[in-house]
Image (cartoon, rainbow, N blue to C red; front, top):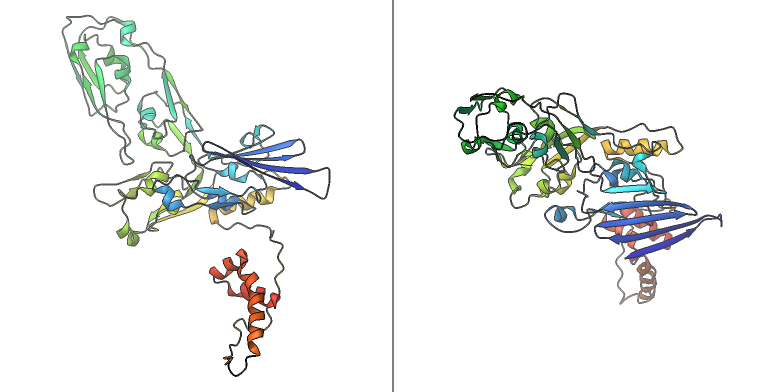
Length: 438
């Protein structure tokens, strides 16, 4: 499916062509100006409806879809882009916290172009990392990959049957790093579903005595000194080594990895600063199990149902995108953004518009140029005209005048903008149109 529009400027040598195509869950908009090409790719399946793109758009080219219905299961785009208004400035792509909108100019992603400011958030694994299994297993976005490089027990000391000894684990010291389970098949980690209030992905560590030959390697290997073995050490103990990598495309900067890490090895810069609050007097109608809207749209997976409350949010994980606020049909969530982490806004011709966009992310107030090209006329006479009762039986000559006025009124009533102003109770604008027509 595609749609194409061509705009010819006053300069006949400049031809602007805009096309729209749909490929699976992607709405792809292309603007070609002579030899230059800009492509805007909106993946609606990735979009959570936070509306930041709506706030920053300088052309009012983006509007919200039916967010309540989408949050509870409706398959539809959370935002709608009008390609006839879009200027392909790239602000929506630069500030989308879930990277649902991407834009490139002549094949280069604008996120790689320093002339365009963008969100500057990241997760960094620092030198304190062991590494261990906790962050990879806890990450709700599956954005962390662990690669361990040390030799396992079977590689350095193959299993010997018939060995005697004793082994025990002090669970008060164990932090479920999981290194013993990777080292030796005698250790078995019992998985659990992490929750925002308890992100640890394991609930127990068991020992399969049939697979243990009491080689004693695990005792010296355990970083928490939590294992005791009665046996004989006959081989050098491997040292824990490996790497942890973050997939920036999947990572939401939520902070689950930081919360679960026992070694303080994770540093996070979130895209936004702010506050999130539940409005208690509106929670009476909240049905977190039946609705689940805030759960479904939250990129940080920060919502949960605690044992003592109807619903709650782990504020440490929130990235303040605001999607949950827009998805809540009982209006019980309040999200305020007070800061935006972004790269430098360079001193270029469009810098003021980008600064306005960044300010709009915090305030929701976007200053935009007037592009409607309408001239507002001063209202002459009362806003509410005097009404005179007329008996047409006594003065039938007025009937022709009434019909004439109705004929003049009908084109106005068929005008979509007039009806919109009327429905918005903007009577002043409607009266101006009536006076102009009369």
